[in-house]
Length: 405
Image (cartoon, rainbow, N blue to C red):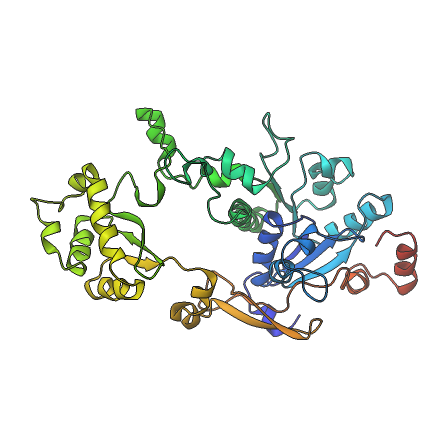
């Protein structure tokens, strides 16, 4: 093992990523960025559908695949074949974590359910990502992030009053959230295993990850029967002004006056300190009661200046504001450059440089790494079977002949 890997916190951990698309693989990807060896197990024909999700490259795999499958080793195994199942079991014996996101019962149907895997490897940690979890009346329903946004309650809140609910940002937001929660579960399970030697499975549901990010939605309904509705970009039940406002140059700015002090700073930036007086809108309660008037005042002010002019005034007084960046804005943003939030990775197969989001979170002593971008289908099959399972060329050739790999 090279020195770079030894210095990372998850060095020595081996992960099998047999999941598809984003949620499960995203968890495995994070583990890989911090030193784990990740074996991406794919079907020999076509591989992970993520290879075809997004903008194609000259190699055929998409930019999404190149970014999200980084650091992984591609190993092809047909789990529908008995020999493929046995091969997978041999890998599980030498593995710490398996990530999967098939519908409940799929691994069991292949003879690879939790009870089978734990007998093979009692210290194994199995991440199981589904739309609705391993239990409950909806467990057999297919899971998609867009549906999870709806079921989990966040899509209902997104959009204009009485308008059609819209996508809350990226259509894959729920996948990434669940990948993060799944990763958290895996890390806690690894800690428990360190203490006891025992493995366990982690049950992560897309809709639960979304629902967990809805602040006081549940207690407010339970206590006061409040059903929060869509209020568009300038409404918040707790603060005002708190939203998005158009600027003179056709851009947008976000303003978040969560306290009276912050509103005072905004009033100063506007050159209208009287707005923050007790006789007008100095108290949050008054601003909320008159939110339409307050938002109109702020909207008119924003519409009279360019985004840069507004930002400079807000930064001078300490008013909380920021630009609504599109991706072109992000590429020109000094903060993103200073922290290297986007990094350039040279890809030998493509013969060109790919720009991808950097590794987060940032660890001061052992920061994560991007060692390579998404691999070609089956690129590491022979290497893994030889080095990990001790197979010779003749055995591997026989598996290829049977189309197991």
